[in-house]
Length: 238
Image (cartoon, rainbow, N blue to C red; front, side, top):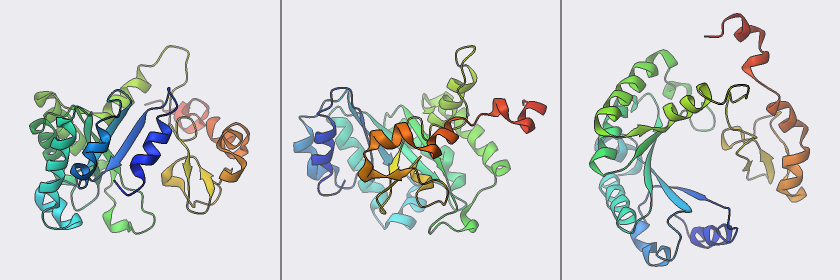
């Protein structure tokens, strides 16, 4: 939570249909609680970063960060705000995935969201975890969650796609459908993961988000993609 964040959220919440999801390390939660007390608990929730066990978390974020994160989660929850945990999974902490489910359960939180590593920017290929190694960890985390009453967001999203309404198409990601991202270059991209990627530039934010949303050829092409039209997946639907 940075300076100006609260003001930005309040500006967004002027739109009666808007809902704000605030990704945060929760370290400054206690400093801004007084201002947050007037916010509608039904229209904002906090997704707090948890990078594994205390050892893994503090190795990335500094000694004491794990304890302070927990204090921040409890402070937000104590004010009635919905809170979930989000874990950025990489080769150094992947084994901690079930432990984050335990932490969520211990804190009385309803769900965990795992964020898969994109090998871009400062994230080198040495941090990437192959899917065949991730799969058993996801299964273990899901089984732990089932026992302790914690949902895994990633699995719930797949369920909503697989068991969608008959005759509808609900596959691939929500990039360009439910999300847009504005990069530091002032250009619009389908999602934060695609900022700066050649060919993913949807236009300049100065043209207006609605104009880009409705008129970008890049978004039109992206939205037309589907496993239903892929020769590879038609040959092997599983």
